[in-house]
Image (cartoon, helix red, strand yellow):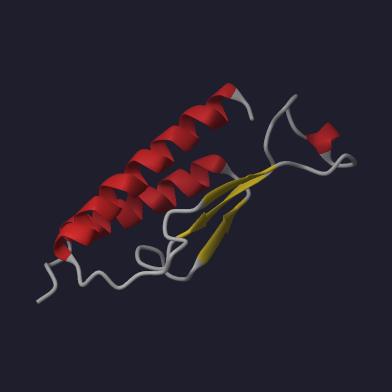
Length: 98
């Protein structure tokens, strides 16, 4: 993973934690056991030449609660960050469950 990817991964994890903290404080608690799972995907041996030295090829984020589906696949860390930040913002702006 590149230094930039590592930094973005940290941001993704912070946004996810804040969104889940809010959800479990105000939401109905319905969730799946894999909530917040993040996986870093590295290129195959054959594709590694197309990435910076040690660079990851993509990222997966599991979020049944926050995202539009369960597993969310991103080829770009910045794309993942934009999506997770939107989930975070949407969660914090949502009305509490009654």
